[in-house]
Length: 448
Ligand SMILES: C[S@@+](CC[C@H](N)C(=O)[O-])C[C@H]1O[C@@H](n2cnc3c(N)ncnc32)[C@H](O)[C@@H]1O
Image (cartoon, rainbow, N blue to C red; front, side):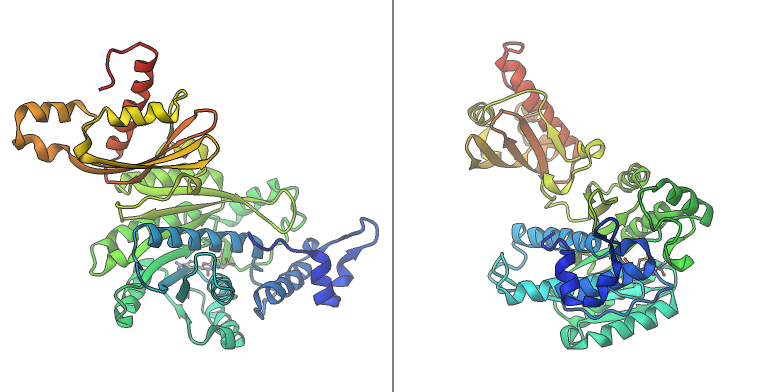
């Protein structure tokens, strides 16, 4: 995150915040009361993001800094996706359409994202490209929808019609259709869409009370101001996100659907992750990941996760996007033991070269990245059999597999699945490279 809050700077910007200074601890107590949190959030939003936000004291006050982390994650994902797939090649402007499911009364994600994008555009962004963003924020709560619209109007000078707030029925299927209708209405064939969501986390008031009572370190525990809609949903976050997954599968059958490139959602409980990745696998969605982040206005902030998935199998995010160890094996594998750069290259060169391409880059002293692209599964026994049996078996061996191989200065080798449909091909290639080490030790006679 670019901006960590500087309390003194904020008090300088809004001297009314000085009343939260605690003479005993000699610290600011912004987070010990709902009003303190609101005053802090409004000031930080105005100072760092040029946003004027009305926050209803009876509704959820957004914690800005974990919202910023989520926005930045999604922008990085979309940026890398569009660069590496060359979606906007030779165009100065990248065009995105975001959908925020459950935008709440502050429409915090659409507003923050616009502000971050506009600031980057103004300063000549790092990637030297301009982003043209539109956003739809949706909610089932009519009062929140009304207040969100007021917040958009309050910032209209900045927003100039780029954010639309819609009230929806609890069926999210309707919502994705709305997004698709907007994409089609726009008539802009190249606008890429993404979905964000901060779902209600709990299934009931008693679950909420039980989980919140564990967070002893949070002085706001038990005093979070929010409506039931904001915190509670039938089946909790697992059901809510499983519905998002299920409905994304349904909508895949519709026209123009390939334009929703990334579906993402925040996850509040660690235990939900395994259930959600299982739900993705069960629906044969292999291109997914889980990103953990920890952020708050204070040290030692709350852990949160982002689960993300796509139906585009030609591109998968690099390993740094997938940082939850117990799930990571799905697309990032570490080879059991050490191999040097030249050993990895000579293993690759031992394979038939007509169906594979690779390029190497030295990332730092003694650290390498090798990007490999296969058109056929040339390391396998199936491939060798196909050579004997002629062309009728060829279809069996044709498969895209893109893998990034990273080699550290300590010769640790890590493989990251970057493209291609078949998980078992990725696993099989990892196994093959592991086997090459056995060869090095003299445990096997040949590499293939
Ligand atoms: C945890 S709040 C998030 C609010 C805001 N996005 C934020 O991060 O502060 C969840 C929001 O989802 C909305 N919501 C609940 N069920 C929904 C549904 N089926 N479709 C769309 N929104 C829903 C609630 O009304 C609430 O505003």
